[in-house]
Length: 446
Image 1 (tube, rainbow, N blue to C red):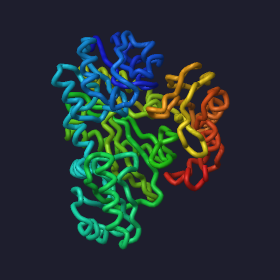
Image 2 (image 1 turned 90 degrees about the horizontal axis):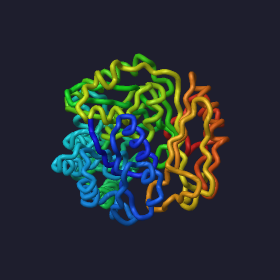
Image 3 (image 1 turned 135 degrees about the horizontal axis):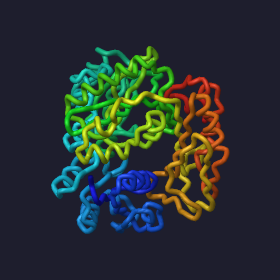
Image 4 (image 1 turned 30 degrees about the vertical axis):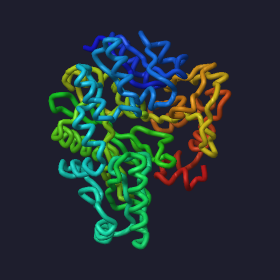
């Protein structure tokens, strides 16, 4: 097992890693920017090192600064959390070259999954269902037009190296394809340094379903079931559930077997999330694989009883999957996560500033992952996530009731947050009945 681990991240995920390390007796080293000096991860780690100024490019994205801190602290491992450098294959290779274990998949797997068009191709070859589309990045608008005509409109153009909705264009009219192609490539180039795009059939009313996977260093992979992430705005998730609404046990088991076989074939290890779109017929179609721990991992932990971050550490240390998760766990009950962001709940504009008072909700079935405290300041330089509230119950209706209770008892003064939005979402008949898709926020006017 590792002795000293550096956490290349901040906020609630840094605290989550500290908790897992304490369970395993691993000493932790926090890194922080100048504005994060008073953050909880700095206070709770065994050691903390300042690595630069507030902008991410000068601190949490500065590979030389992070590696220097790792060498100064004499660590044997680095956990990247999510975001920042978590899916940077070059960073994973640098860690490897320095004799430091990167807690995550192998660099080659990260690189393959980071190229969305190549990941799509690999998924199809491994037997994972994909939407009709281009097997390789498209070179010209005319090539895109020919393919679009063959599979039928509407289609969607996506950045090969992208995410978060950038470099993405929906095309319903053939006359708009050339302009959309040029816009998507330009945006992809500006955002990701690569203008490559690919094309897929567009599903009008999809649901966003993702499967949690774990793999060891010896070719063994299991699926821990699925999550529903359909409630989102501009491709940013707001509410997540496990299990997903309407996914039968048979479909869950069948897809789990497919993913275990496919990911074993490509040599995938550690934690990952395979994301799908579900069409109106209930069929799943591969989108991408996120080669890291996800923000919404707690809902899977709640229904499966598996500590995913601790599992990451054990698997990276060479433990076989059977020793980490002795048997594929069954789903128990239902869990919901609400992401509490520091933003105006109506305009979604950021709301950084001083948290005058924070009182986390509690009671049966409630978990809160947060780095906030009374007197802490939300910085404008980073992601606006302030807290994750997770409710678990024997049934979905009980989980909803517990989440409503938690939201009503959460006190977060001094900044605007998304809590009022979450309260409105949970009051809608569509949410109560589980009848929603990715258009939910748009159509409900929330």
